[in-house]
Image (cartoon, rainbow over the protein chains, first blue to last red):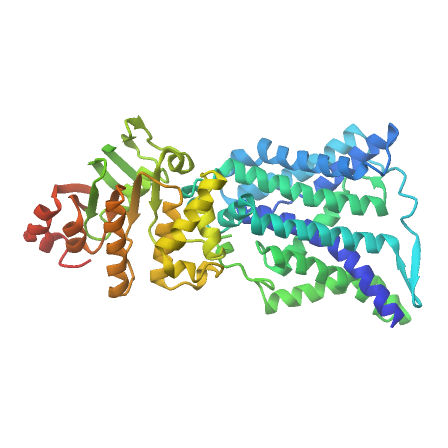
Length: 298
Length: 235
C-alpha cells in the first residue's frame, strides 16, 4: 500500500510535467494545425539561460522567473521568425519547419556552448523527504503537483474567462469565423505561442530543479513524451492534454515499479511496454480520449 | 455606403464571379438572389475580406477595402453572418456573443450582451449552453446576434433561413425587418427569393457568376419569367 501511494505520487509528478508540455502542444495545434516539434527546445533554452545566470551568481529564488521569461520570449520569437512566414502553407511545410528549428537548436547549443552537459546547482531542499503516517513523500513531487495544479487552474481561468482565451478557442474551432468577429490572426497566434511558452517555462523550471543541467538535445526526449500525451488525450483538446500527460506519467512509474524483476529484469523494459500499451490504445481509439471533431483536416 | 465595382473572383482555375458590380445605400435592405452556385456566397465573402478578388474593387464609406483583413472590416463597421452560420459549437452562447463583441470596449460589450439577451429571449434561456446543442433556428439567431455584437452599420447575411423550419423562417424575416427599422443597412443573400425581394428595397439577380438583372424588389419579384427560368420557383 505504501509503495502504491508513493508510486502514484511519483507518477503524478512526472505526469504533470508531461501535462504542461502537452497542453502547449495542443494549444499550438489548435490555432495553427501544427504539431510543434520545436516545443521541447523551450526547455533547453530555459536550461542554458539558467546555466548562464548561475555562472554569474544566480539564485533559485528568482531563477523560475528567468526560465519562464526566456521560454516565453523564445516561443514568441520562433513564431515571429519562422512560423509566421509559412502559416498558410501545407501542414507538412509547417511540420518540417518545426523539425528544422529543433535540429537548429541542437546545433546552436553544441557550437555556442558545448556538446557536453553543463551542470549548475540545484535547490537545497529538492531531495528532502517527509513522512505522513508511514508513507514518505519527496518534497519535489509535492511541489511539482502543487505548481502544476495552480498553473492549470490559471490556464482554465484564462481560457474560460478572458477575451484572449475565448478568441483562442474560437480560432481553434474556425479560424475564418474568428476573423469575422474581429479577431486578429497575428495577435491570437502570438498570444497562443506566448502562453505555450509560459507553460513550457513552468515545466522547464520543475524539470531543472530536479536535474539542474543543460544539454543540447535535452528537449527532445520530453518533447516525444509530450506529443504522445497530447495525442493520447486527443490533439487539440486541452483537458485531453492534461489527462494524457497524467496517464502517461502514471503508466511509466507503475510499470517501472510493478513489473516483475524476476529473471531478466523486466523493469528495464518499462518504456518499451508503455509504448506497446500506447500502440494498442491507438488501435482501439485512434482519435485519443477526447475526440476533437474540427481537428480532422490534419 | 458599399460599392462593389466589377469584381472577378477565382478559386484556382474556376471563376466564381465575373465582373460583378452592385451598390448598397445607407439604410437600404438589398437582396441578392439567384440559383445555387451563382456566386452569391463568393460575392459576400469577397466583400467581407475572406476572399481577394482578382480584379475590381470594393469600397465602403468611400474607402477602398479590396482584400482587407476581415478583422479590420469589423472595426470599420461591416459584419458578415457567414454561410452555414459557423457559430462556435465548443463555446457557450455567451462566449460566442462575447467573441462577436471582441472589438468593442468592455463597457459597450456588456451593454450589448444585455441588449442581445433582451432581443433574443431564446438565447437568454440557453446562455451557458454550448452552442453545439442549439437547434437550427436558435443557432441562426445566435449567428445574427453575434454579428450584431460589433454594432455593424452594414450587415451582410448569407442564407439566414437555410435549413430552418417554416416558423423559424418567419422569425428570421421578422428579425430582418426589425434590423431595418433600427436603421441598419443590410445586404441579404436568400434562397427564399420571392419573400426576400418582397421585403427588400432593391435586388440583384445573379446567375453563373454574373449579375443579370437589377431593380426594386417589387420589379424583380414581378418579373416571373426571370424567376421561372433561372430559379425554378425555389432553389
